[in-house]
Length: 515
Image 1 (tube, helix red, strand yellow):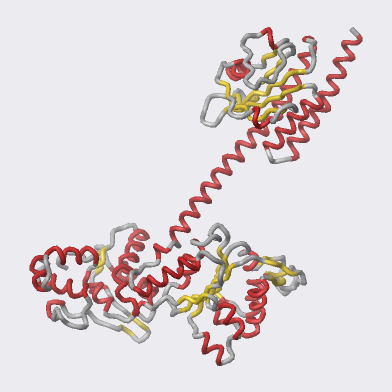
Image 2: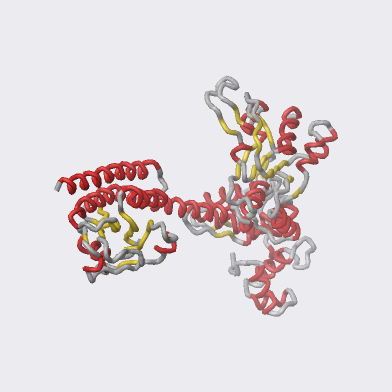
């Protein structure tokens, strides 16, 4: 009797020490899988429980899936692979059903035992306890005590139940983290898809020859990390091109950081690009990363690069050449991996001649120049561009908007000094003024810096069909107007067959109704 008491005391001491180790493991790491592996190892090494197994309720299923097994004689991962227990199947499945521990004094004495792991000795005991949250079973913890004394099994069962309670908190935390991680990843993927959709090349509209060349350049430069200098008038879509290059490049999953260089004086521009240390200047109350650090592994878009001063140009040149810089107020050199996209509407060649822009910086930036054309040089794209912008406005205003051919003809007679931005503003103003949602030529009021630029053009019925000032689309529309929008009559006026004019109406996106 005295020996039995000492033996029980010895087991209790080992279990108490093991329980401390289990709690330490579970509280010292947020890696659920790693923690559980260590816990099962503690059961083997310090609690006299071999072949410890953890089975959890499979997601979206009412059965147990073996999650982790610790056995020094096998590859644990391969042992537990794809092993499941249905409710009531074997001892493990019965614990799931009954929600109570099951203790076998000898495995061979119970025909319910299903050793799918092929690990357990038939002449030793076996204990399986539920892992529960309130009355809900989350899983089953099972192991084989390394003793053949049935009277000691109560100690092992109690210890295994306490361990299961500790694991339950870890399992719940792991599930919550997994759910939140899945939600965050889904949201991240949704936002990435949305951003890529918003900034894909589909948002750069145009079928003219000059725009096809721009699309081809975007496709080519997106593959590599070469510096791109986007040059052109204001409102031609330089930032849109920069977005398309980044989001179609291998760096698309990295950050895309933008900065308008014309918006800040030199001292603030240096801090904005390179960052600063706490106390570097008045108002620097804490350390701050600059745009170069924020863009590490991604792309930095420097808009209006031609506006920076000569003094700052030298500082920028070093970063572009060496890929390194120091924060303001620091001597520590920071290295970054950043792709540079720059844009300007200035004539940099003339700026270099006038000593207002460094020649070495010019050549560093001008690796791959791109020239988005002004709208007047691709006026044939205006109908498609206007329809694209109208669709965008319709989504914003949550109603249907329609642009008449008369309005399109009127807009095509203008040279658009403000380019696409001016066109977008005009269409937004016209849509606001249209109660019905139909935008006709009466709502097209084109104002510039010098006042109204054009007035409504005369009716196409008064225009000769072979006028050299008309392009093919205008000629087809004029013929339709003269023919009362009867396609067969318009085809005869143009010496075409009905099939030919029908084809042109389709490909030119002409609204075949009298306006």
